[in-house]
Amino acid sequence: MKNLQLDNKSVLITGANTGIGKAVALLFAKEGANISFIHFGDDENANKTKDEIVALGKRSISFDGDVSNNQFIQDVVSKTVDEFGTIDILVNNAGTQVPCDNIENIREEDIRQTFDSNIIGMILLTKAVFPFLKQGSAIINTTSATAYLGHEALLDYSATKGAIVSFTRSLALQSKPKGIRVNAVAPGPVATPLTEETFGEEEDDGSKPPFERNASTEEIAASFLFLASENACQITGQVLHPNGGIIVNG
Image (cartoon, rainbow, N blue to C red; front, side, top):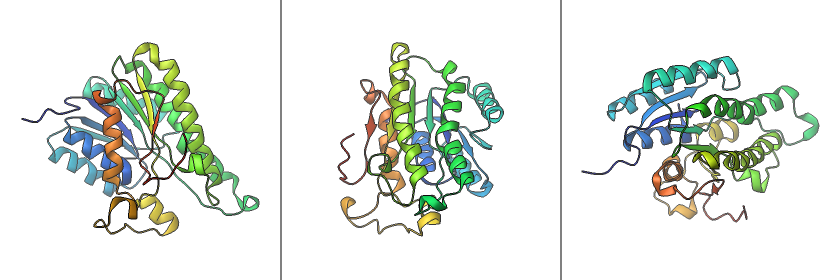
């Protein structure tokens, strides 16, 4: 019988109703984890994700709300611990983006929403989860190749992704004495519902060789599994770059 890499681990994931977050949730469940996840609206896809996790024989609970709302995330953490007994792995994946190709036209409300969703909520949730983590626990944050390359239409989004890299490195230093690993994944081009909604990008032909197409969400999820598993026991404060060969030097 196959040894499951995350057998009976308790995982909390943000933004797992679709895209990379859903792919991570399903892969972790296949590897034996029970999954608690946060989504923002989109109950239909959230219910599908939950049903797929349960069909894999694992427990799942979901919460609809804003990750930057401190009371909401306190409730999520409390209810997750009540249900699963603890939290072993935190995956900070929730994010949003609003393109604007001219800084003169960027809207204050979009800037604040992007920072609230992408980095402020991440820090608040990590703070709430941290007391329950222990030696061997892992935190994995979703950043992006845009943190290193920039993006002409995503000024504030790119800035939040750069902040996530710095947050990851700094928290890794603080967490090292406690034996908690903190890492990040910086995908390159991936066809997800968010990118399709934002830029009209459609999923590539999966029969093409990996370096000739955008990554699938399942391919990106494999990096999260590695960082969550004991195979990454010597890795903290690092960023994995499943980006198809883009050189980012970071």
